[in-house]
Image 1 (tube, rainbow, N blue to C red):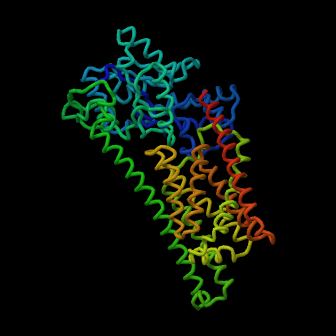
Image 2: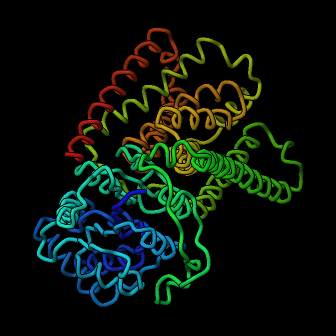
Image 3: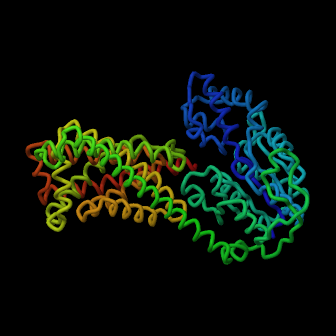
Length: 530
């Protein structure tokens, strides 16, 4: 087994969300900023506080330092104890210590707070070395913290990086391990954004404490014995006993080649697929139920079957029902899955890149409509013809609200927020993009829309990946829908855009805009890493 094991604290050993986010709220309030949703403040968990205040709220360096002082005003008294050990963690630490490993804490949190928290949970005795940042602003980056741990280990004669492993929940932990040449195990139960740990190059990603146990102790389970910890939180853990660690120092031999790893990856994949399917099914059923209820109510009011209305009136009420059902499904699905969706980006965004993104949305929407029209694919889909007639036989204001605003909101929450977000946790970007795009296409239920939505869906997933916030694909989707609605249906010369030259022009414009968008956001990502 590894002779030296370095642990991050927040998001790895304990869940600090209530304390950290509550103290960030307190600090922001002193600047007149009200942020009622703790979820929006999750990006503050892990990175240095001052940098986060400057990044997410555009504070100056002086304001950021003042905010940190206000944060500590509450954290030093209350916030540090608003913390919960992850179930099973106390038992794991007990067994690792019993196996003879040297345990260390490498945290970006000030050392004085780390010490208090470890004592509070009754787990301080397990750690030989505890290193955090300093209150005066020194040693705030994870690379510096890990380097100090290595220095102290060297003083003990334990400085072989190949026998060390860093365990953490953010990319900073992975990068800290790489800085000293140590191995790295990332935990996905913490506060990393989708894809963050994979992109950082984590050697192994585990989804729970038992997965971590499987890697570090070869899957041995805790038996009966002394209870881990002496605080109220220790009761959340199992009874910890003696365990024997066996196996090689090789991560490949210890985990990647084991059946436990295969089951874990398989379980993660099918869990992601199941959550995605459930979200799609829920969105469809909720929309159907709300729409049916509205149409039934309209029939009762008219005291006739809805089909007996004249064509335009019939289509109008169908569009009203569609808009209301989309809005209802959006609200319900948001309520269920909002914690799985990235609303507040942790990525640097090149504001100039929004221009090619908008151009891409408009150009690909017209270009794809041109391709589908010129190939006459609609002839093979009577369903599409009926749907198209209904969608565009409606007042302009209702069309804009329904297809330009409500549809992008609802569909992005489900298909990018949940479906792509879940697939991205278990698959590499290209596979997650394609599978989520296919799911989006098949959901539309007819050949023409399936082809169109698959292409658009893949681009929407890429936009979500590059910007790191659901707001980006929502904007993209809205622009695409509105541009098609306005250019093809409202303008008398809209058919001009469906000619071969126009189609080629818009597709070339799409390719150019996509390349420029990729370049601009790629450079922004490099700046952030630098």
